[in-house]
Length: 265
Image (cartoon, rainbow, N blue to C red):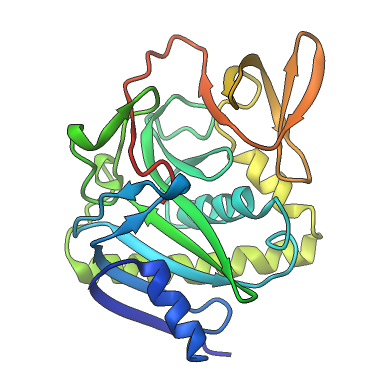
C-alpha cells in the first residue's frame, strides 16, 4: 500500500492540513504532510510555536493500535524517531515523554545533550491519530521566543556531519525517516508489543541518573526507566514510583538556560 506524502508551503498548521486530508479520505495510515513553515503552529498547552522555513514541520498519521492506542503513544513515537535518525547516522536522545534531544558528544542517550532539537504532539480527531513532528534542522527559536527553566534549543546542523539547508534536502530526509519509521515499527511487531519499551529505554536521556520531575510538585529521584503505561519510573527515597505527567531535567552539574516556547510541537 502506498504511503502518500503531501508537500505544502506556508500553512497555518500542518496538523490541521493532515486532518483536512483525512476528512477527504486522502491520508491513509503512515501517510504524511510536510510543510515549509507554519503561521500558527501550536505546541502542548496550546502554546504558539515558532516555525520559520528551514526545519521539518510534518504530520504523520499513525495506526490506532498498540502502542499508539494507549498512554505509551508519545514516548513510542519519540523512540521511533530516534531509531529512524540513528539508521541515518544521526544520534539523538529521547527526553520523556516526547522531546528529541541533540547528543552533544555523539556517544548516545546517556551523554550530556546539547539541547532540544524537536518534539512530538499527538492529536486524535474522529478516530484518526496524527503525530505532529517538529525537528530543528537549520534554525532554532530566537532568545525572545524561549522561556526560562529548561534545556536550550539546538538544531541538527549543529552536528558536524549534518548540513541540510534547502527544501529538497529536507524532503529527502523526511522521506527517508518515514521509511525508517515504518521499518522500525514492523520490527517491533516481530519482536512483540513491548518492543517499543526496550527501544525507548535504549535511547532514554539520563537513564540511571538523578533527575528532577516537576509535575506541579518538584521531586528528585533516580530515573530507572519507563513503564508499559508510558509513564516514567523514578526511585525516590528508595521507593519506585511511576509518574504519567511532568517535566524532567537532569541534576548533574547542569545549569538550565531556556526551553523553547513550543515545549513540544
